[in-house]
Amino acid sequence: MRLIQEFMAALERMLEKPEIEARRKEIQTLYDKYVGPYTFYHTATVDEALDALAGVDEEHRIGKIEMLAELCYSEARMYSKPESDLLLDKAYKLFDYLEHNSGTFSFDRRNKMNFIMSQKVSI
Image (cartoon, rainbow, N blue to C red; front, side, top):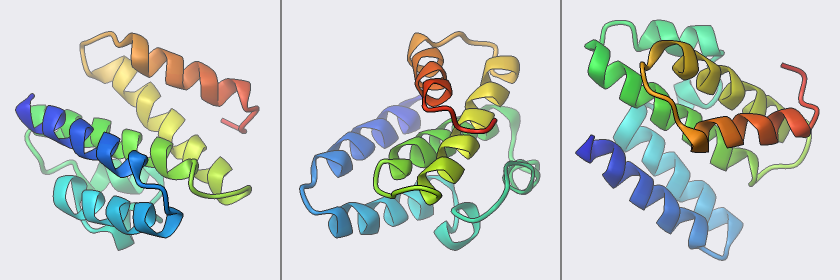
């Protein structure tokens, strides 16, 4: 839980950076530090990402999936279509996975899912 709180604070700081290029570099660092290699997770499908995290114990796996979903959601704001749609689609699917498998309900997660749906991203 502490790791997720630390991650969320780092994500908030990254989003406050005014320059888009600085935010992109920072988000790559967040992927590498909290989830795994940016080069893999940025381009991986949801199934590939979940398969890669399959070897992690359940508690940490759910946390990493949550962090990956947040990274995709935040990163989508840094790109224009169609890249932003792809990232939002991935974020939605990861949030949906968490809805069904995390054992916790989150209003924040539900609001983000509703926002993504309102953007008419093909889910």
